[in-house]
Structure formats: C-alpha cells, structure tokens
Image 1 (cartoon, each protein chain N blue to C red):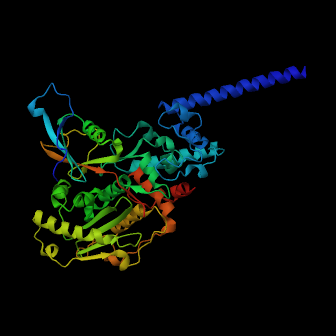
Image 2: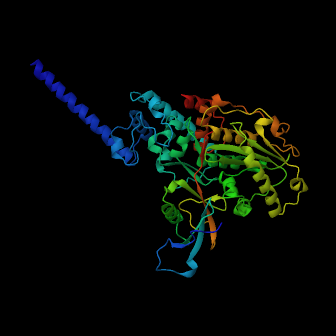
Image 3: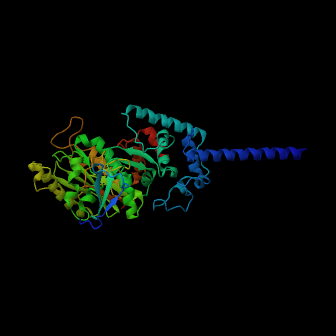
Length: 387
Length: 99
C-alpha cells in the first residue's frame, strides 16, 4: 500500500518536474526567437545567470558558453564566469526592485525632450529597463543588438561595443566617438567642439594631407574662433588613446596622456600644422589665431593629471579628460554669468583616479544608454549600479 | 594617393542603366588606395559597404565609412547624404587602444 502510494507520488513528482522543464525550454525558445515575453528582462537575466546551457544550442548568435575557459570573445578576458555563479538567480523581491528602477528611468525620460528612436534599435531594447541596466547591456545575448543610437555621432552602439567598457577591456572607436558626440550636443553652444577619432588618422595617413579633411569642418558647420576649445581624440598605432585639447583662447595645444608618455610629441606638430592650414583655408583673419606663438605641451609635464596604472583604461581616461575639460570650459574674455571665474587649463583639477575607473566605466555605460553626457548618476541608481 | 586598384565595379546590376540615376563613388582607405563603385542614388549604401568589405576580405563591422567626416549608416542612400558624382568616401579601419 505504502509502496504503491509512494511510487504514485514519485511519478507525479517526475511528471511535474518534466513539465516544468518543458515550460522553461519553451520560454527560452520564445525569448530567443524574438517573440514577446511579458517579463523579458527577468527571464533573459535568469538565462544569463544560468550560463545559457541549452539555449546556446538553439540560437546561432549566442553559440558560446559563459563558463570558464571562454576567453576569446573580444580578444580580451571574459569576466562573466567569476561574477555570476550559476546558482545565483534573481528572486521575486529583486524583480520588484527592477520594476521600481524601470519606473524611475521612465519618469526621468518624461522630463527630457522626446528622442526619435532609430529603427536599428531593436524593439526589445525600448522595453528593457529591468534590473541593473549595465549588466543587461553587457549580457551576452545583446552582443549583436544595437542598444542605443547616438544621433549626434550617427553611431548605433552594439552590445559588443559596450562590453568594451567592462573593466580591463580596451575601448574602441565606437565608444569614444559616441561619448564625444554626447559631449558635442551638450557643450557645443559653449564653444567646445569635439572631433572624432578618425580626424587625426585621416589627416595624417598615409602622410599629412590637409585636403583629406578640408571639407570636414564645413560639413559640421564649425569655424574656428577665439573662444573655441577643440577636443581631438587620437589613436596611436592601434594601442593607445590620448586626448589633445586646442585652447584657442590661450593659444595652447595640450596633450592629455594617461600613461604620461612622450607619444604626444608625434601628434602635436601635425595638429599645429592643421590649425594654420585650417585658418588659411577658411579665411580666418583674426591675428590672434594666425600668430606663430602657440605653445605645444604635454599636460603631465605641467600639471598633476591622473595616471593610469592598469593595462586597458587609457580610452576611459581620455573620455574623462574630455568631459572635465568641456564641463569647465569658459574662455577668459567672456565670463559667463552662471559659472565661477574662468580657470586656465592648467589649474583644472581632475577629480578621479585609477581606483575610480571600474565605477566610472559603469557610469559611462549608463550615460551612453541614457544619452546624457553627465556622469553624475543620481544616488539611487548609483547604489544599484555598484551592486 | 595614386589609385592602384582603381577599377570600376558595378554594385547595382546593369540592365536598367539610366545615365542620371547612377553615380560613381570613390572609396579610399587610410593607405590612400582607391576603389571606384557605381551605385544608384536610391540604393542603400549597405550594398557598397558589403561589396567593399567582401573585396577586402574582412568582416563588415571592421570598417567605418565616412563621408566628409560624417558617419555613413547602412540604410543611408547617396541622395539622402547629398553625394555627387565622383565624391570620395573614407573607409577607416576600426581603432582600439588600452595603454
């Protein structure tokens, strides 16, 4: 009697377990085939935590496992394995928290002017604001999706590109140019203009040629003037990022190099040359700009700037230099009422150091996803990011 | 910038060739090599990019295409960007850096 009842219970239990498993697989299949699932984030997250065992076989795009040993994804180290043990699942309370966070973001959005979403941004993207936005952006299932479209730089950032903002990874041109696009939108009216990273490459390869970039400033409707600050990211030999700031107000070209190296001396003379060519070509007649007494310098030789000690964050440093310079820019001749007394570039203090970089990388992801250049995240979301 | 590989490659199939509808575009890379393409004004430039990357034998996402410094997206057309005959497009290899 007991044995029969026992075996019946066992059978029932097995049947239930089987149906649960089927249900999970069905969900997985639905998520991966792109159908609408109500709580998409939570399930995607769950799959992510589980390391995508079955689903990796179902979907060609995500055909890789997230377990240890997968270190070839972007040519850099895969960081997921250590951070996400398979047993860790989002609990119900946590899901509720995701919803609160989503609401928070939606409310913030309501205050901004509406942005036309680019068709390349997948429909799913607009619905997902669950949990930690940053981890979502870095999840492997988003690798090939366009997650955010920066209108000013005309760049659609994929999950692949945003994954470059995981701590030790190197940055690529997409991330750099997208963020500088955001800075452009914010600070262009104050006289700050950010070029993109291909400007210097185009100007100097195969050798210096002004004709290649002659039409670029015309097309961007930018003319150099006395109160302009030009920010130019420069990629040195596919291994290093530096930022050159051209301060027309003080006639300075300054190279911000997080490694404190001498690489800047290869870059500065070319840009000085370009400056002269540009003034002549565009018919600038300001004697201040046409003068020969421009100073070229490396920033770390004249002031204290943060120094990089890891092997992958120079791009992040360059972006942070750009942000600080653009934010604090005020030309000496025209003091604006809202800002304190103008500071020369040399007395600017950069309020970050190497130890802040992992956190600031996450803030950069947030900034890019929210399309706001500010890195000062509101307190509530900082808590959630740093978890 | 002598064009060592400057041959014409029709992107759009010939057949309905009407003179005013097609334009020639030159794609030049960082080394100064040029390739010329003929494309219809209303055709998305994705075709040109695909053709260029296939020709170079690289992944589609490894080149960034710029027109006068502005990024070209896949669904832009020559007409939308205001391109004229014999305009140049810059094909720049992706960049990265860490130290």
